[in-house]
Amino acid sequence: MTTTNTGFGATGAPLRRLAGAALITAPVLMTGGMLTSPPQTGDSSSAYLSSLAGDFGLTVLSANLFHYAWVLIALGVPGALLLLRGRRGRGLTTAGVGLTMFGAMQMSGLLLSDWFTGAMPGVVPLGDAVRVFDQVTADPSLSAWRLSGVAGGVLLLPLVLAGLARAGVVGWWTVPVVALPYLAGPAVPVAGPVLALAAYAPLMLVGARLLRRSRSDVRTAEAAGSHDSSDRPVETGR
Image (cartoon, rainbow, N blue to C red; front, side, top):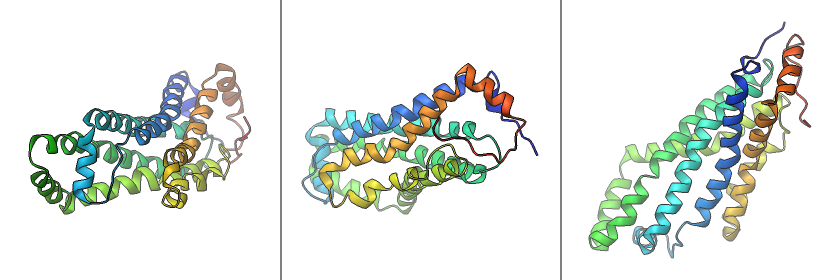
């Protein structure tokens, strides 16, 4: 059985370039957001609010970097589907893409709170700010929002990569790499930004694959090979 990929057409090249650029840029912004996160002296609500209020400009910069990193992930990750030639890995990739998009949008929306939590201690007494913060964060719907963001935007990226690995687009090594911050981060907190960049490096690889596949000679070769078996894996070394 043969299949054709709609990404091979003329519209596929711009989409691949945009998605590729988004997936390459997002990890850089994510790392920048971690590097500019204000230092926190403790785990209490007051320590958290004080850290955000201590340098409001830095808080806003970090929030912007995180926000746009998640926006780019939501916009770029559907491009992974343009790398698939046939049925192999399509189910995994499609499920991972949909759930990751939803999670990334949830994570992006959560960043709005940083503007308010960073400003509150400078407007009202810290005790009052803490009471408002604790009441808001105790709401079950906000907890569900936060958990769905983490589950979709962070924990389900391996599903996307597993689908791409099954299709031969990337290597299987990319799947465990995205878990690096969660495996080693608590033990090596000072290496958090480095581990985050390493964890999101597979996204940059997918972005590079998309940029390469946007070239006219590659698209011509793909169109010529679209009559081959739909289950033939893609070579990962190109």
